[in-house]
Amino acid sequence: MTSQFTKSYVGTGYRHDKGEQKGEKTARFRPRIPRDGKYEVRFAYTPGGNRSPNVPVTVISADGRKTVTINQKLTPPLDGRFISLGQHRFLRGGPHEVAVTNAGTTGVVIIDAVQFLPVKVSGKKPVATKTPPVKSPGKPAQLRTLQRQLKALQQQAPGQPKYMSVEEEKAIADTRIHVRGNVHNLGAVAPRGFLQVISLDYRPAFSSKQSGRRELGKWIAHRDNPLTARVLANRLWHWLFGAGLVRTTDNFGTTGELPSHPRLLDYLAARLIQQNWSIKSLLRELVLTRTYRLSSRHDQLGSESDPDNRLLWRMNRRRLDAESLLDAMLAVSGRLRTDLGGPQIRSGTTNDYNYRHDSNRRALYWPVLRNSLPELFKVFDFANPSMVTGRRENSSTTPQALFLMNNPWVLQQADHAAERALGLRHGDHRRMQLIVRATLGRPPTPSELESMLAFVGSENDDRGVRLQKWAQVIQVLLRRSTSDTFGERPCASSAATRKHAKHVTGNLQPSGRSGDRSLWLRPTGTHRAAEHVRLGRTGQPTAAPTAPPPPAGQADHLPVHAGRAEPRRFVRLQAGAGETGR
Image (cartoon, rainbow, N blue to C red; front, side):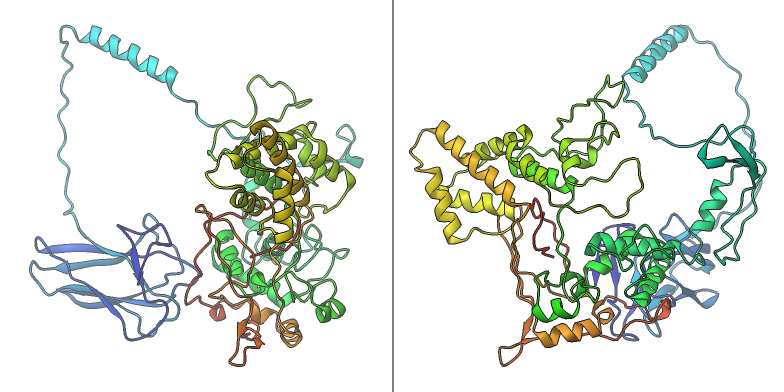
């Protein structure tokens, strides 16, 4: 099967066996050797966590057959693409080939390309003779002209991007303790070292010429460190599901909570290390699970037996964070700038007091100034820039409602959205449907549609009056977006809920279809609805199949995805709390 999913391939793509039909598939590469001699053979593949660790590659040359076993989970050592199969002797026109088979392999076998590089004959290199300089008439003037042109071009060239970083001190020494945090009250010298409470045998020695930051980083990210991978995996779970397996994401100590699923946390930590600490790979694995695609709607039995949803019988209901809310409102107004890179702070800014935030770019590019946060960030629970925050507060307060009712920036976005809606070549009925979907993430109910159309009046009314009424409707929708329930989806039966509560870790299996009835906006304005439960022959809902929990931390038993769900390449324009459609 041809694929272009992993981008480090050679040419236009690579092939794989989908992890199926083991022992039945073989790929052969037959070269056209231009001349007799020795050639270095290189084999290209794209690595990944689901790849096979024991792929046999056989080279048939004039010297005979030689088989090399390749672990395709590891990144190829040559340019990240190729691995050397050794040097072999080939004859022009000979029956030579490189064969790759999936016999006896586990996981997905990848084939990409094979290189045959001639081995150069060693010998002394000829010594070049030095040519004496020659002065040519007119050359100095031409040189000066070229130098002036080069200087002018260098002045016009864009500046190199700058990043805040650290540098080593000229004199490396241990730090003294600051008693009670006072830099002027120094105590004893604290030698550089590692936490003694963590039983980790790996303790690299510090150099007398460097600070030790590199050694500290290696110790933190060492595969035997019991904390780093678990803390990071727990935060990834928190970002996706709204609550971590350890709900105190910033506290794994004795005063924090215990994990609700310790074996699952160990499994995710092992997967993270096995996939070379790739956050993207682990996120992809999590979003393809049935657990991630569960409905967020309450069920009476589940609410009574597990009101805190610690057994993950449903998806947690979550609000959008402040940054996503800002982006969604700009997108509804049609003024969102999606360009990448560039400066974040207005030129001429000398301090962070009374900074005027008026950008139409994504919130990612808005400057975070401790003394001058955007008003929307202050109101909607943005994290304190002076603190490290893994879990933000989640509040519903009166200032949030007043902000959406009276803030000039919100009123301005409503005006722009009204201009955009009336500029569409549709009737009011279709316009209202589109604007409700853009703000609430769902279609309007018949009664809502009737009330809003009656309020905006006839299409023959004065345009100025219509703009004002449409802006008022959109502002109401923006206010409602923070509390509207959208994307209602049916829950599975009580039996299915009980079964899921017992085998929650077994639900971490990739699903080929999404448990979602919520509406999503595509660039074309179409939407897709999907079933939440499968229907049996009797028409009754049946629970999705589950699998036994995976062994904790065992790389040999990690699941391999036989297929991948197509990623959604469109955005739900939602601006607040409600059902979390997946």
